[in-house]
Length: 269
Image (cartoon, rainbow, N blue to C red; front, side, top):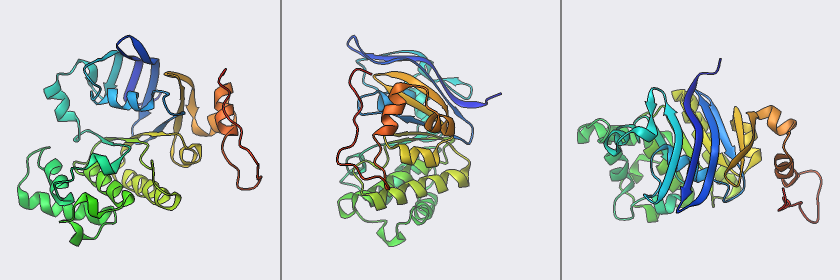
């Protein structure tokens, strides 16, 4: 029997009558990673934002999002704030725009630590330095500002912020967007080392099937707001049953067979 820490059931999201997510079901097992894969505009990020109640007020959300004993869609904003950052943390796509440019990275990490629960400045600074060391940033950079860091270094700061209060579930929304291949590989390795140390669960959102193949226990393939295929990673990637999944796999470039032109996903699928 599957033990789900996060269970999204029959979730639908629409914006002013335009449907973005249609009656989807996703679960994340305790200590495991579920990946949502699909092309841009498929509804992956909308789903992630719905979990934490971060969609704009214009959104209409129906269904259930259950995290452990809580039905998140029925919680008040005040109660949701006790879950965000403490029990569920999220890493967003664009680290350069997610950090506040007028505060040092140390101040931004400390702010999160002192919120859940409130800790002294001294304790928060000690924890901040430990987190910087864990994500590979020298302690003497604690007073640096975001503009002094590269995209990859800013993403490391975002990971430190996400880990600050030892969450039970981490949502990683395209965490390697706009990063070069080498930096992306380092960020993925860092994320999953942190996950293993804490035995966290993870909802990992990506369009990169190679990354997903190496990190996810389960996969949900999403297109136009629908889950078109889901299951264990090995089964979905090796024996896909949906035509769209097969098309996504065919679009991946090969290191061995050079092609003049990569296949594309047909619009009519």
